[in-house]
Structure formats: structure tokens, C-alpha cells
Image (tube, rainbow over all chains, first blue to last red; front, side, top):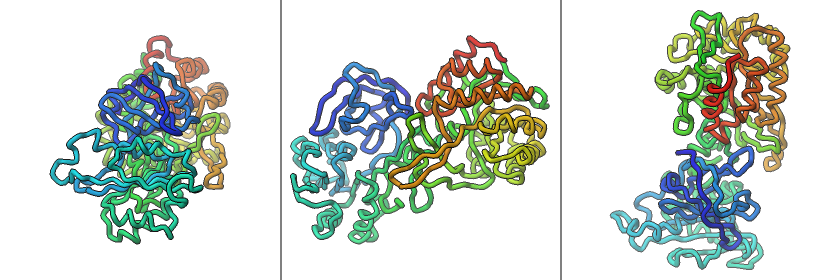
Length: 261
Length: 275
């Protein structure tokens, strides 16, 4: 973890998101899905930014047009602290990875979806199947809120549910009659979740029903409360878990779904 | 350039620089190890600690406000014994003095904490945080309990609102120095949870409040004063020194810019004579 300046090298759009590229060699190499940086964007607190694409010397974030970082311009310098936190940890023997995301949280999971492409051969080491499968269950209010699915690697099998039926099924992730989520949870041997924490208790109930006795960290979920220091000093970003409280900045922000309270 | 925050104590509390982090903002001493040039500072202020472990407040603890941030941790800490097991050796290697902040919960607990800490050589001083609700009698009881048990110099951190009302009682009860002041408390409406949260307020707006309190305290007591509250720049720190502070503590600014600690410390040491 360091405090260092990053150069904005590119600004673009990806569907409803603004894409900002940060050149930050000393920080990018330590990032991973679910890890984050704290960016000084002028507010009293730094803003947590999660990488959607990670390269050796740079990373992209995908943010809402209303986010303070969306006003940055190429050539601007931004002070970053990072990399911070514990990200998603995919067990070595994983063969079927399930990603569950709401549209606005999908960018956090994108490094997992692109992992095959970023690290050629990564999945070919012993214990991995070269035919590694990734399924993505993506929910959104409407089609206009969706990340462009055509940009995802073809190997990622995408299921979309929208509240208004404008893309995919007219449904929600938690609608039990569809059995969408239980079927995918049954299929997967690791699940990574990024969405509204208010939905996590219901998701956890499904995981308990379908995968009773599943190992620790079978289902990992992102929780991002407001963060002040990012290093565990202020004790501000507490997250309630089964055995007390943990800090999102150092113990998380990715937690075992079944331990969250 | 050295400052003695406890000139009347047998051990003294000599700092090579007037700048330190404030309790509650810097953790227990290791969290910022990779981000802050500790050797540039006058001291580390770590904690707060209580005798027994405290789980602390439920989430959310942090509410951003238009003027800064409201933080309510509920004194979350692993308890004195666990902290000493893990950090006493770390503090012994610190290049600058370590001051441990003890939460002034009740006289008995404070006395117990101070007795345990008295034998820890790595600790150069204690800072005792008075409860925001303490009246002069309660403040006297808590400070006397700490003073009677502490081996190290004792700094008492005053609540901002009652700083001038409590400062003389704290000094008469044994405080070697005073920190003026603890962050003020406020209440914010937390819409997602449909409830209020009360906690300490951090932000640049605190500075004029704390500066006023320090000037009033400086007129009432003659022990060294540590200015604290809303310091974000060199100029902010200089204002406290001009108002009568011998040293300063930087609070919430550390979260946004950890490098500001060493920057303010180095700039002050090259430009400002101590009070």
C-alpha cells in the first residue's frame, strides 16, 4: 500500500458507465477484483474506486456519470492510496465460477470475468480446467442500465433479469419461482456477489438451502460502507458479521456471505 | 527544537517536533506505517484503549456530512491486555515517543489501565480522554485516579464544549498537560437505517471552535497545551501555536492525506519557534 499520484490517461464510456483509466504502476500491480484504491477527488473523505480492468501499469474504473471521478479529464493527476482491502479469493480447484451482480455493481466483478484473457495459461495450471466456466447472473432496472454484454468474453454465460423486462427475463434475482439463482448456485463451486447488501440475507438463505454444508467462502459478497482511513485506523467502516464486527477496509470489503449479519 | 509537555514531571515528555496524530485517527501505531514518515513527527498518539475489549458500535459508524464526517466507533478496541501483548514491542521500536490514549470511562477503570501501563517502558506518556458529559467533580475524580496510578506524564484531553470549565479541575487533579480539545459531538440522520447516529465530528469547521477553546484555556492555566481540532494545513497548526499551544494534534486530515502529518511537521520545525 502506498500513497501516490496517478495520471488519468483516458476517459470514455461503456454503456451507462464512464470509464476512467488511471496510470499507476506501483498500485495497479497489486490490485485484484474486490480490492480498491482511495482517491482524493476533493471531498472530505477519499472515494473508494474498484478496478474493472487491471493491467500491469494501469487500471480502469467504471463509474456512474454522477460520480465525482466522472468529471476528471485526461492528463489530470489524482492522489491515490492503495491497493487496499481483501478481494475475491477464488479457490484453486474452482471449475465453475458464478458471478451475481446488480448492474451498478458489475464493474467490481469484471476482472474475474476477464481473468482468462488477462492471464493466459492461468487456468491451465494443475487443478484448473482449461474449459473453466463462468456464469454471470445480472440484474438491472432496465436495459439502459446494463454494461454492454457484447464486451464480455464469449465464454461468460450471461443471464439477465430486468425489472421492466426490457432485457432478458422480467424478474429479479431473488424471485424464487424462477429458480434462476438456486440452479446457478447448485451448478457453481464458487460464487462472487456484488450488489445491494439489503439483498444479501435472502441470497444467503438460498445458498444455505441449496448448498448446505458448502465450504467457507463458497459465496463471497462485497460490502462497501463509507470508508475514511482505508487502513483500519479509524474503525469507521465496520461490518457486522457472525462473530462481531469486521472492518471493510482491512478485513474486507469482500466477506463470506454466510457470515454477514 | 524540542518541546517538553511535562516539565514538572520527573520523566518529562520531550518531543523533537510539535506535530502528532490525534487519538482515534491513527490506530495503534502500525496501520499507517507504510504511509506516514513517523520519524518526522513529535510523537504518536495511539488508541483509545479501555481496560476490557469493546466490540464498538454497530454499522454504520461513519456518516459523511456536508461539513466533514461524523464518526461513532463506540470505543472499539481489543482491550488493554491484548493491545499490550501485540503492540508493546512495536512501540518500543518507535523512532518517536508513544503516547497511549486511555478512554476516561470511570475512575476505577482508568486507574486500572494506568497502573498496567505504568510499567510499560515503551510508553512515554498517557493521554486521558474525559467524557463529554463530565462535570468538574467527575473530571477531578477521573484525573486523580489516573494521576495516582500513572507512571508516565499525564495529558488530559478536554471535551471541546466544556474545555474552559474543566481545565482548572484537570490541572489541580494532576494533569501535566492538556489537549484542547476532543472533537465535538453531533447527530446525523441516517436515512437508509431510518435512525439518528450521534458521534464525533471531524472537518475543517472544527478549527475555529477548538482555537477559541484553546485561547480560553490558555488564559486560565499555565501547563503546556496541545491544540487539536480541524487542523488540515501548516497555517492551521501555526494558528494553534500562536494561540498558546506548545504542540498540535492532527485528526481527520490524516485520513484524506496521510502525508500531511510529516509535511506539517517538517514545515513547522523549519519555520516556527515553539511556544
